[in-house]
Image (cartoon, rainbow, N blue to C red; front, side):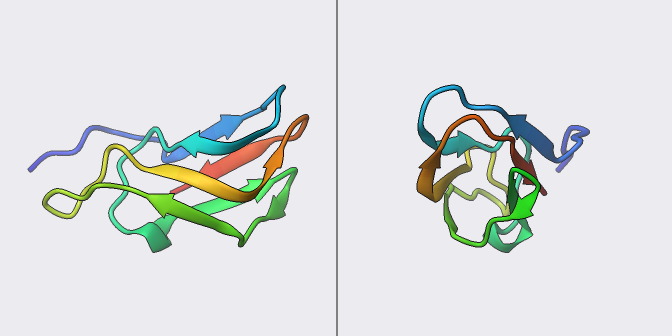
Length: 76
C-alpha cells in the first residue's frame, strides 16, 4: 500500500467558537496525534476516525472546550 506524502501538520485559526477540527493527513493511531492551542500542549481532546488497513483519512479532533482567536496546531 502506498501513502501520499504528508507534512503531518495542520494549522487552524478559528474566528468563531470552534471545537472540531479535521485532520488533513493520514493517521495510523489516535495516539500519534498532538494538539497545541496557542502554543501550549492541549491534552484534553478526543479523536473520531475510521481505520481501514491501519490508516485513517477521515480523522477529526474535538477539543474539550471551544476556542477562537488562537492558533490550533495538529501534529502527526
